[in-house]
Image (tube, rainbow, N blue to C red; front, side, top):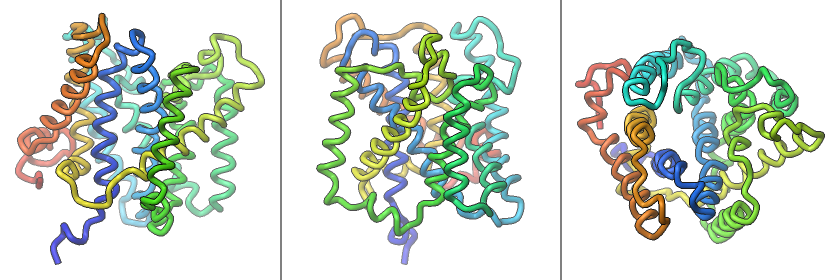
Length: 335
């Protein structure tokens, strides 16, 4: 039996769509101030796209007892983090996105926080794996709620995101193949679509500070220095929104091989490399169709996002960037 007939395409399809949404989300961000529809769409995407990646990463973090586990994880995450930190620091300075070359490796640039946070998750997982899941999840939620009161817990070292998003990663770790059958239940698709539409409408009517969804800021920053007793409740509500939106999105994913499925195995290439394009676009302020939002605006944003994902996931690009992404020779890349 071939590998294709054995492979579970559900999560490959999810990762492929999610990486498109990562690129699309970065592309539409400059347009959100010009359109309430794009602003609501941006908030909807950020409600589940990175949490979904973290949930899926947790789901596949089941081999903690393998020899040299953390060493291998470090090679996959910290090594490319260091390489791309140096590269992006110089690149953003040259393209004008940054006024100076960033020299502090513990202050992630662009989207590199994901690698640092994901590595921390694996370290935490190794430490807490012997404890009862109920206690680990409860303590993680309490720490997340309390962490928001500290102005020292922010984007530095990605510590705020690590604290805020760990419960999502951990739930993914606890999830079994049997549990995913609920996510794969296509009888729930209509409900999932309705849920996502409701979130979009709510965001359109009552837009929120998008920083709540980024998980990188303390309450004082999120509440415009008006931190109050409701801030922890808002963070708890945030978890509800994330899980409901995330599970609704995953329920819409196909179990079968699609034309885009292969991209699901190449998301790290797209994730790290698309910052080059975003750096140019934002540095040179290339935002066509922004002054008058129309169907051409949506068409451009979708088309350019699809094009970026497609080009950065081609065999050619993946092969020759393999030494940077996976620290392996170009010839070792297998499409």
